[in-house]
Structures are given as C-alpha cells and as structure tokens.
Image (tube, rainbow, N blue to C red):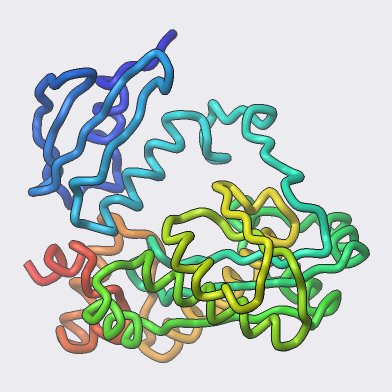
Length: 304
C-alpha cells in the first residue's frame, strides 16, 4: 500500500512527542499539503521521483524540527526503531575503510541534557576488534551495554576525545549563535582537532546533520578527506564515537540526579514537562538554565 502525505500528517498529529504543540488541520497545496505546528509552517510533498518528503524549512524551532525528522525517518522506514526498517536498503557502508576517524554527537534532542560530541580514530586492527566486541549505533544498545562497551573502547584505543557542552554554556552559546547545528559544527571541529593532536590521520566520517561546510572550513588546515553521511553510525568508528558520547551523557544525567536529588528524564515529551514543573517548584525558574536547553518550547510549557 502506497503511503500518502495524509498518512504522514496523521502520524505527526497523533505523535506523543508533540503533545505540547498545537497541530492545525491541513490544507491542500500544489503537490502536497500544508499545516501549522504552533506558528511554524510545515509542508509535506509527494512526487513520483522522490516519494513523500517533509519540508521543515519554514520552521524556526530546532526542537520541533528534530522531533519531526525523527517521525519522518520512522514513517519512511529509515530508522532502526521503525517496524518497516529495510536493512538492505539502508546498508550504506562500508563507505570508508579504516584507518579513519569517526565523529558523532548526542543530546541535541534531549531537553535535560548537555550536548556531547565523541570522536574516535581507529586503525584497521582496532576497528576489527571493536566490530567483534559488538560495537554498533548507541541508539540500539541498552544503557548497561553502552557503559560496558565504552570501557572496552577506551582499552582498545587512546585516540579519542569527548567534548561536553554543559547546559548553561550551551544556553550562552545559543543566545550568541542562535542555531543548534552551528554549535554542533563548532563542537565537532574542536573535538576532531583534539584527536588529531594525539594521532595524525587522513580520513574522517561524520554523522550528517548539516553545516558540512562549516566543519570543512574549520578543519581545512588538516587537509582531511571528509565524508558526511546520514546513519553514519553503521560504521564502527562512528558507532564507537556515539557510544563514548552516550556513556558521557548517562554519567552526566546520573550526576545531575544525585546533585539535585531529582530524576531527569531524557527526550522532550509530556513527562519532561511534568518533571519540569516539579523542578521549578523545588528549585525555582532561574535554576532551569543549568539543567536544560532554554530555547526549547518545553520551557514555555513548564512555566505556563
């Protein structure tokens, strides 16, 4: 059965991740449909060549765009969490063979979390060892497994770097820059350079999120062969980077829970809002700046 723009619209409208947003009815436009999520214009198109496509270019909310793109990936069967996921269709690798550096980030869609970038350089033998150990995309691993594999990765290689942008620092940067992808690009550049200081390398693979030119320009002096691909975590080097970053995020959340004697949920959904209201009652509005991403719409819902 062929999917339609209406099918994707209904998936978005009924998503639990968007309970704090107002989704309007849609209207027909040329080649698709258009609707609003709060004040953000969202369009869905359909064509024989490209199939169903989601256009969030008119949306000014980074948080909303992250949620919508995840829903779209699941709808299209391009996410490992989708029941329609086609492993053969999405087998993009090997793109680059080791030795190479992989770089990935976590936390950008989580309200109560820092941004953490992991970068790992692997020689061929190290790459093969990690593959044997079961290293793969951190999103497909339990928290306990991530913690264990992160320890194993650090035993296999010292050529890695983990860069953490705490919530208060992130909010400061966002006020100046106003774009999450620009912050991520700066973080990747900085972290890749940190690894390069330990071990010179020639090739790097980065999970695609936009701002490729900013990263290329930031690393121009290193004269690297750079590739940016979606689902780059299928490559062991990027998967290792994602595991180290996720392990650091879990440690950060654990420390936050202990410091505040409070349970911080990940994600950006109704549970996050409920916990946020509890947090404000206990610690006050000003303390939010130290534990969350203040530009997320979730803040308004908590304070309202």
